[in-house]
Length: 354
Ligand code: NCD
Ligand code: ZN
Image (tube, rainbow, N blue to C red; front, side, top):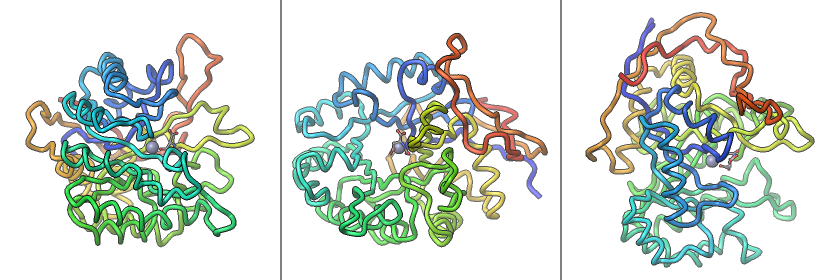
């Protein structure tokens, strides 16, 4: 039985670090979770839409977590220009994130609409920027589209973009379905796929009636979770860690309509050790969490990414905290409840970033 694991610090290729007090609480926890490279989502209020905003945000994050490398993204919107893509590339911005709602702004049909961004995608392809896709289409009861099939219905669009831009690196973010896994496998080497901690663990029954397990895309059927587990167990190099850790104050999770998002940042590697142990894949953890994403993004050879080491040990009674205070000085801001709060996850980090 494995009781200790030492591996390089992990890379999280999809994380929400927020702004203001929430950012100040969450950002130092990236390192606590054993992660030294964080790929930052731009859905702030207002969203990060240009290079200047992304660089300002990056400086704030670096000040809070000097040991972490931050890779920045822009929010795809009609305001994004080809010139801005070139500027972003020059400034080291890594990618552009597309959210379904932004895509549907100017049309009734979200899917058709990606074509208005083709000149942007072309510039991204030329500049080596990555396209990060939130792969869902909006619910539409008339067309029998809801959260359970919104990802699967998006996949033809992924295929279309990947075929139209064979040299554009595209990541289907936070895949949740067997259909998505099969599509990504079938597509070429320009298409990668991030998988979260929680989607390796949850199915629909776990979030129906449990607000803290509700996220977008939602966890799906047991066979979908099996497909995610199987592809990770197989060590497929285009499937890698992107936690989609997305903290929300408890009041907005437990309110009348729950905000989507699961918070995993403080314990990324312990959660993964637990899950990979359960699925008998501990030998695949390092590639999934530390190497495959970097390789897909072309970062393996880049100077400046010196691997630090993290050691985890198996232990009984490692309880996940009940919650994290958003501010040490203002209790009114409330708390964030992490994934698996109060549960024993059986693994803990004993030496970090050495
Ligand atoms: C994300 C968030 O809260 O920012 N929520 C989520 O459920 N994943 C938004 C997103 O990535 O869809
Ligand atoms: Zn996200």
